Length: 205
Image (cartoon, rainbow, N blue to C red; front, side, top):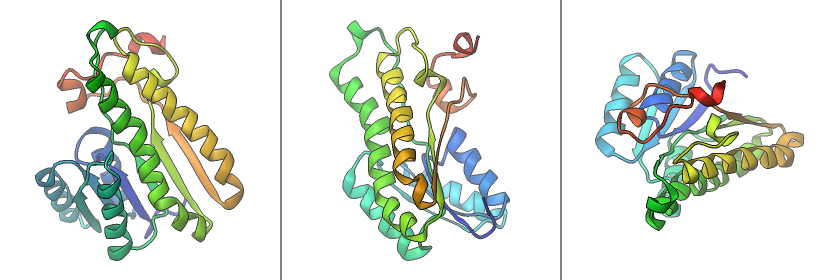
């Protein structure tokens, strides 16, 4: 993959894996277009990227909202053009026994972790297919290959990420696009600090 000058779109890019990805790609020469839910965090991250000489833009976006995603895609297209890389990183986790898991908990997890995957990918896919090249990276989890006690919603959503990724890969690989799903284990991020993630170290064994 040629990174220098390539445009990388990253969701959930103000914390944790998303933020680290934005800096890693930017330091390798990619231009960065990012989003996250909180405007102040987006602004701060864009400033930090630019302070390192990275070409970066961003806007607040709830990636589970179709209108927000359309607005973000329009913003990226207007300001920087068609991405070569899309990183679907935004995600949440609600860890409770199923008997304590509300329908709101379930729906919110699926909305952010799965619905957003469809919305963001579809928003940029046509342009990338038109270019005939590009990579879509979906951040899944080891929980997408296993079960976790108290993780029915989260594990189900990450299994869905893997199924989505494998199926999309079969659709687009002959048209020059790659689809990659990454399955991290436990990562020290604010996601974990907020108690929204359980240790996956036992899964790795």
